[in-house]
Length: 258
Image (cartoon, rainbow, N blue to C red; front, side):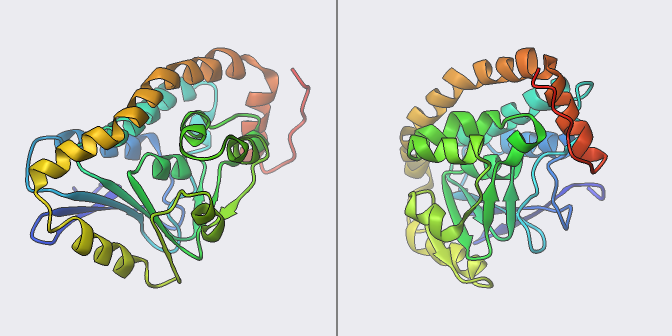
């Protein structure tokens, strides 16, 4: 579609579907892009010769994250459940989903990457969930990070808004591969050619489902509670609304601690 926020192409004779977040330079995950991603992944669930889905960002950056204006009190109740459903669709996808990260990968962009089966990054990557600086928090990261990495890392990123580069992500076991800038596409393509293309697509689907079962169950068991905490408690506070408004107005927030 002419107005699509995704660029889509098939590679390796249709065995790989490559998706590009195509709203540069920030590739912001608007609600419209979330809906498009969710619908595409849902449509891809049927058995086929597909062996991987690869997600990247157009231009220098993966994604600056979800739309900040859509976090305002009158919109976030519609946006957040859509985002969480999209993440669930990716987590539970039948074939491996590979995220390839260059540049800024922030907030919802990093949460999208966490939903992937495998993450590859080049040394320009900078990942963070800085929501706390806006008076809010990232529910998906709060749920998935403790399951995927040391609990202390969750506190550093979710509470401290600490940014991590590719070297640090690799050290914490979050990366399947790392390379210098300019080589990421080649690295991912080589890994797919060597590790996925020789396999039976039918067997791969079953093995992938087995390998993801615990992560999917963990997410389903906790994301609703995190969403209720966000919408039912956090968004009732003064400071959550103030932090979002201050960011939009490009000023320092006036915290009331309530």
